[in-house]
Image (cartoon, helix red, strand yellow):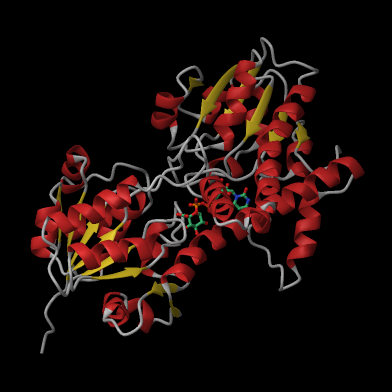
Length: 443
Ligand code: UGA
């Protein structure tokens, strides 16, 4: 006895959508990925992932070959073929207010309705949205596609481990209207991970929307907390890495997201805390999230403090000095440079007159487009050739594994700034380097 295969559509094939489409096909569903950008869907259909994500391209090809996964730029095709539609489009920040630009979410919903969404179909929002969005979209579906249902199912995947996070999530959150069929249908979609023990939280639309931004706000706060402690350590002579290790033994605090350094970047944490604040302001509860302004400020200071540390290590000015920057991506195992702390620091040193050479294992093609004024190289050795200071700004394992003794002859002055606290100061100092990091005393 085989139950009929569920047909899903995934609207938006950016980071979230492409990963979701591939993983849903991997779970055995028939999936159509839809994007208004036809170049993107053509590349995906040809087995090419348009961004760097470990493991994703292999799974894409496998599921294309199995015939479970197709791509299209037509919402009509999605409406014809699928009974569950995941909305995975981007929700960028409006440059004026910090508030969320919902135009892609609106367009996807309106497009589904215009394409003749049938009664009995389920629309599942996964994009990160301000509170109240799901209720509004549900109203629009009720008017334009009677009998179609909406659920809100936020996504918690991390770049760099997106496939694993999607196939084995920490938890599933279903925002639903009581009495509908959405919960049962989402349980069918996610049956495999639920069977493996993933907890399911079934709640209302608003709570589901808030869980997503609250989780990112908490993570951002944790990082800024430890970076604030680094500021205290710098004034007092303490060591923030030893402090973090000691804090981590309290199970109520835990070890994760207590890595001090140049702070958080990427397409989510910085944007989400600003959007969350903007929404709270609109709702008249801005003071409840006023601390997020400080979280943001500590995070920005981690970058300027790194530039100041490098400037001081260079004897007062980067002007005319050879600077090597290792890392461009906002985090390792990613080619994403959105709001990258590494490129922000590199830019500041360049603007101060430094000759900045950048190397990153994955993000250089993206960095070249958006930061054309920096000089790029294709290896650690080339980046550091003749350098008077080396900054490690993204915690790629390639950089953690550098042998400082082997690197030493390539630089003109052996000064290293460890922007992520991933190098062992004793090992670097033994190899003749001057080691600096925020929140750690000079040897
Ligand atoms: C983040 C969340 O972790 C995901 O759960 C969420 O689903 C995602 O945003 C999203 O909203 O889509 P991501 O942006 O991939 O995921 O990156 P994180 O792993 O959270 O790292 C964010 C930044 O914080 C990076 O720049 C990282 O280097 C930095 N970081 C992280 C630290 O500076 N210290 C730490 O201890 C941890």
